[in-house]
Image 1 (tube, rainbow, N blue to C red):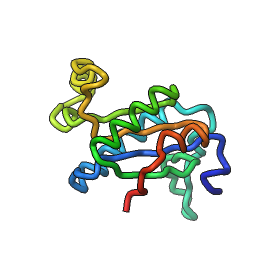
Image 2 (image 1 turned 90 degrees about the vertical axis):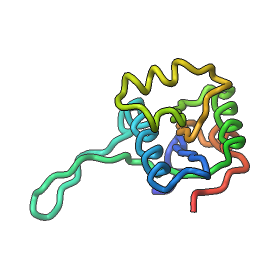
Image 3 (image 1 turned 30 degrees about the vertical axis):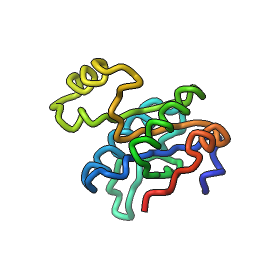
Image 4 (image 1 turned 90 degrees about the horizontal axis):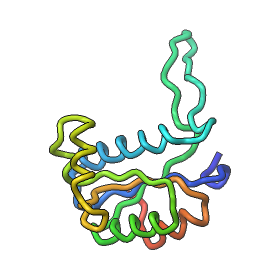
Length: 140
């Protein structure tokens, strides 16, 4: 199944100046938000190999990953808010926090326009997602 076989598009956008480990970390955390708030059927059933060993279920839908400059990421964030898309964010400050409560406090302490974004994830209908992601390049 391709991206267009689903009613929504899921995408992650990471800042292009992050270290590789940071890009992967940000992507994983952002996807947890998309999955946790997805409608029924977002995650498929558990996997099982030929020996009967079961594995955790995964997202049914493809995820598109993009990279962007800090300015472009801010533009994506603004577009997503304007279009009321489902949105997860990851800010620079979260690399220095130690647990979930500190993460929330770090985000809560900063005004929307002042967030130092390093990544966002969206789930939106295709046309809306395309408008939000316009001009971005896929992650290499």
